[in-house]
Length: 113
Image (tube, rainbow, N blue to C red; front, side, top):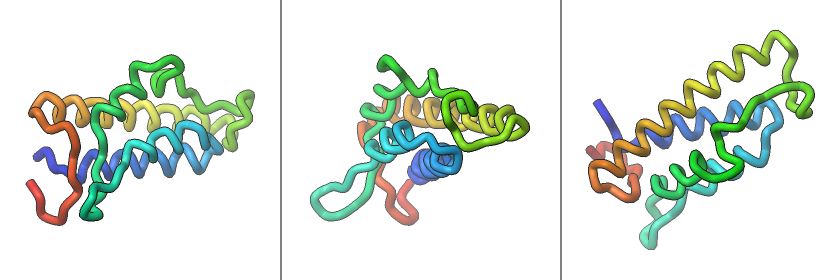
């Protein structure tokens, strides 16, 4: 079942992975897609999120490696990049689904949807 909190949860997981390996720029870009409305509800701006996949450079270009000064060993590099790719695909899919369903922002309410 597609829930409004699933996109938010994937974004947070991705941010944590990026932070763990020293990728602050893209972590901050993802974090900036979460906004707060006038009554204090946090939501994900799906259009802004999708722009990160289509901009240049884009999230699709992110590759964690020691040569780019990321904090990971050679063994961790394969696993971390595989997990990152999986998260990016899930985030992109969920954001597209919400846009397709004519929902421009995804509100994170307990029990909503």
